[in-house]
Amino acid sequence: MAASKSVGIRLERKKDASLLNWNLKKTYSPEKVRVPLRCGSRPCVRAGEHVQTGQKIAEPDRPEEVTVYAGIAGTVTEIASIPDPTGATITAVTVQGRAEPKSAPVVWEVRKGWEQISAGEFMMTCQHLGLVTTDLSSEPVHAKVKKNAAARTLIVNCCEPEPYITCEQVLLLSHPVEILKGAELLRKALGAEKILFAFEECNFEVGELIKSKIFFLKWDHAEARAVPALYPQGLEKLLLQNWFPGKEDQAVAFPASTVFAIYEAVAHQKPFYERIVTVGGECVVEPRSLWLPLGTSFRDALHACKGVMREPDKMVMNGPMAGIAQADMNVPVTAGTAAVLALPKEIVKEDPEEPCLRCNLCVDKCPVGISPVMITLAADHGEFGIAAISGAEACIECGNCGYVCPSKRPMLKKIRAAKEGLKTHRIRETAARHG
Ligand code: SF4
Ligand code: SF4
Image (tube, rainbow, N blue to C red; front, side, top):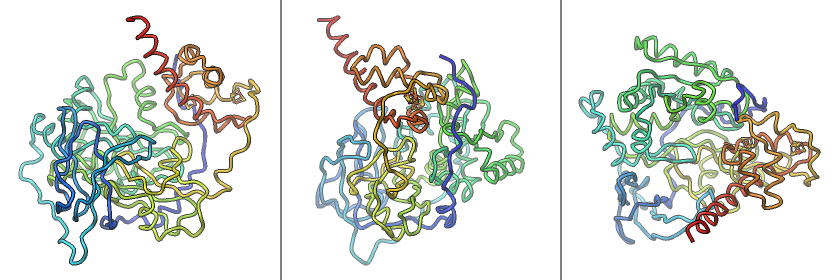
């Protein structure tokens, strides 16, 4: 199963609207947040307790987990199970913001000697300050560093291959030096030799900015490298496959926004309780990328951008290609929420599914070289063994196959169902073997 280089689709970028307001303002403060707790963390506050911005609200139960912090000051009103944007049920701590007068904004002091921090101290800082990666995996940073001890190259992923999403770009344009310094901290903790900043070739201003800062810092161990502006080039798995074929374990990629959070945690001891999110789509009055406390509802995220000018037909978390549709506007922003999109009917209209034409277009456009048509046909018939042989588990859920399919088959939905079916199939097989 070979990955083909630069396979992908040229998509309409739809980023200009949220880039009109590209200056980052201070964090939007909603009246209420429902902070998602991670599986493996236990609340350390009770209903009725007052908390400050950046106060610990849950502690890890396991060494590979992280502490969780409140993103606004207020009163804990509830600790309960709620649905999250991926469809899972999670425990969340609800904090109702304090009525006026509001507490003074928190100023995070610069810590002395932070640039010389040891690898052990780095890991402890990441765990205690709640750092997880800002992609859908939301993996604890210290656990990912530990797992990738063999990596010789750190890739800082500055790409946003999906339409509408601009949060990484805005952060890079606003805080390039902090991201470079965060990358250097991460490189040292990994014991890696080199840093590669990956940016999309159409984002030349980001590339030029990073190159100029590398030059200014006189770093000969860092380089900015362009990725073709083809969807889904720029996703972590493809960067590793294309740049380190057969040696993927020698490199590890982190999103630029995670690297920025690392800088803030180590240099300023700031806990991870907010993230930059693109609120966009044709229905939003003032699309932009902005700081939102974790646990802000999707409804409040829209409100922060002056609401909607027309009722959206579909709400989506992250991009329209691989994002997840949302039926509930109260779901919370999580560490993996890069975008909250309000999309109108003409953009999301779905044509009825027709039978497969065996045209192979989906195979041609699959960036990981598997057979989407075989996986989906197998899924239709509950043949999960065939779905596995056809490469279901290697699918990176980019959505290319569904985008090009002339029969409008909901490929991603079927592939996700195949993966779920495969898990159950394997559990049953194992039970039968031992049973
Ligand atoms: S969603 Fe999966 S099967 Fe479809 S093109 Fe992307 S990687 Fe290939
Ligand atoms: S693109 Fe659609 S119609 Fe063509 S082979 Fe793939 S699933 Fe079938």
